[in-house]
Length: 147
Image 1: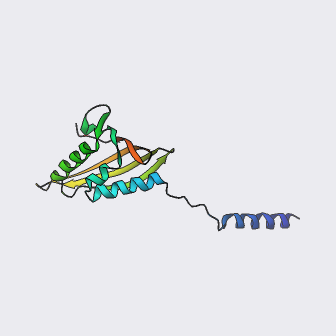
Image 2 (image 1 turned 90 degrees about the horizontal axis):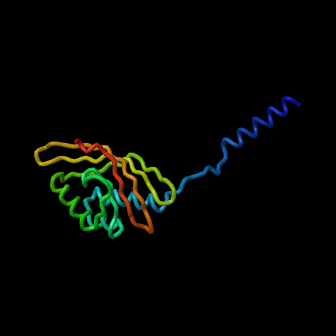
Image 3 (image 1 turned 60 degrees about the horizontal axis):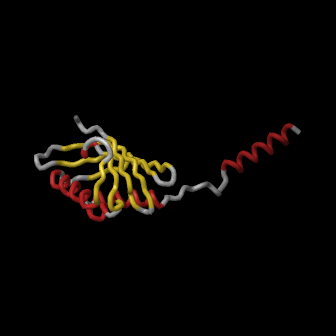
């Protein structure tokens, strides 16, 4: 009887561990939006990227000052166009995305670029994006701003 129970238990464990119906995570619409956002960034498509924000979005970004700053899409285009003039090879490498609830995605990435004088920067950033109705409404970024 003991051998039979051991056999049944071993068989059950073997079947449970080799279940062909493994769970696969689907990519949410918000994750797809974030992936597209970083593609636009890396292609320097500032208008396309800015159009992914609501008409006026809230930013928490040390480069914009303290607290929460509201910006229009045009202000976003202007900011990144100017930054791109200084760093023509500006790019972001996404390390990981972390969905958080229905409306938030946390993105860990490294921004880098090279200036005309050949000086380089590499900046780790963590951003919390709030996405509502298919648009980014809040962009709260955290990084060392060298001050």
